[in-house]
Amino acid sequence: MKKNYFYLLFMALCTVCMFTACSSDDDDKDTNKPIVLNDIVGTYKGTLQVMGTSLEEQLVVEKVDDSKVRVVLKDFTFANMPIGTISAECAAVKDDNGTSYDIYGTAVITVAMFNNAELPVIVDGDCNGKELDVTIAIKEAPMVGDIEVEFYGKK
Image 1 (tube, rainbow, N blue to C red):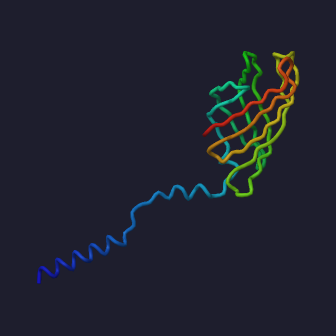
Image 2: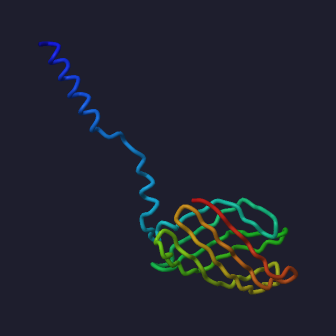
Image 3: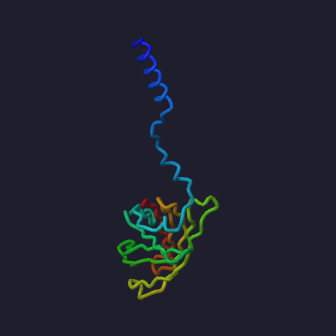
């Protein structure tokens, strides 16, 4: 009789264990959740490519309002020429999937190195809140022409 109770207790324990779920890594569920503008705001560390030269840099994305951000590259230097801080207010438009933002805009920067020349800047890229991929084109720079800067970084 004692053997039957032990056997029943063992079966009940096995049955309970069979219906108990292990913890799973459900972190991947968040990858498809809709992104909001505040998710892309922050500092991104990564690689800046300028005419074949790679530099480790930081780009900052700041919120301006509910549909705009400011992309800031501080103290940019190219070929030993201090260009200065590039700051451009950009539209931030959610992509069709709702998982990233397209970022684009223009600005004008004043470069002391080029006798305070005012140069147009075009910013175009995208951000999913974890990674930022952006191109910054500085147009009509004296002595060097157009300067195209590619940045890819992670938060």
